[in-house]
Image 1 (tube, rainbow, N blue to C red):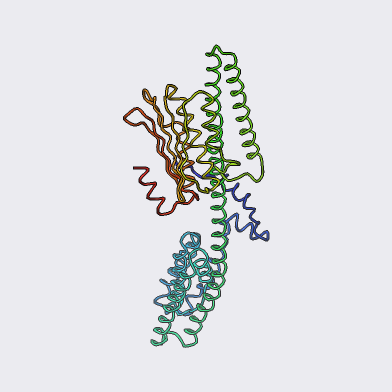
Image 2: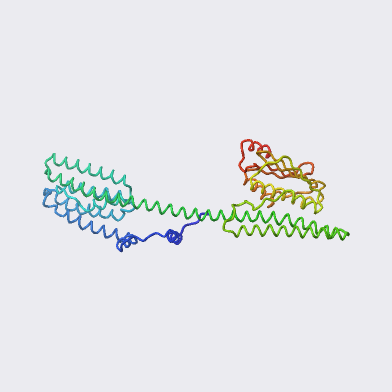
Length: 424
């Protein structure tokens, strides 16, 4: 659903942009009441235009006096009325103004009306600079051609024709220059304001994206810490209750307490990072979780977990953290969903370019969901360091979690090929 922008939204944006007020009382009134301004301009041009075209009887031959006495005022009134729409249709007012100039010329009373001044200015401000210059050139050219035609036929004198053309040139040139200057400045300010509004929208969007990324990061960290620790604590507590050996029960309880303290330490560290002003980027850890600690905790809880490490290579901190979390979540899922597993194997293979993680367990029974928060978080962690991860059951009743991560966090061509093979 598209949200409709309201006037209050625009006002709030303008307040955030801290736009200055237009200088001067008259200019502020002019900007706030454009209709009143256009009516005043139209009435002024109408009065001055009728005054300029009111001497029809002095120059027009007697047979045409009656027609011209009606045509001239009507044309001036119609041309002046187009100024009411000069902001929305400046070209119409411009054409009407030049037609009035041609009418004055054919009335054998060449002169310039204020309509031309306002029309050229309006076309430059509310149209475009290019349209203003092209229109002014075409209008002056048409007026010059008509003046030459009348002078060639002896209808007007050379002086009258030159005065008519020069009047249109001077008034049109002045008003066009002023209009181009003001129009370009107006369009430039409008572009700046529009860009500023876009930046405000983008700033809000970036803030929302950052908040969403932070929430996702907190959810991943909380899930990894709480889920693994509680799984181990539950297993140890159940073992302590089930055994009749007081020494084993006491050892299991002590291990559960130690696991809980470790989870609290991790959680305090994470909350401290969130409260700090220089918090790391999303998914960036304080310290990576060692896979050996995860396996050792599972073994203390009584699960048949083994760890095999092949090779050794320096990896980026983000990759080391992703490896630790993937192993932690994979072992936790095996403990939770395959409590009767007879074997949980964790294999880590380090090369110069990649780190391969395989976690295989048996004891899978029934339908196991694939869309849990843990697996989704692991996929996001792998994608964060440009790696891949897949997790699912095999036909022989085993569950396999396979991940390939680049050692540097940036995959090379060889890594890309490895990832494609691992995903197939």
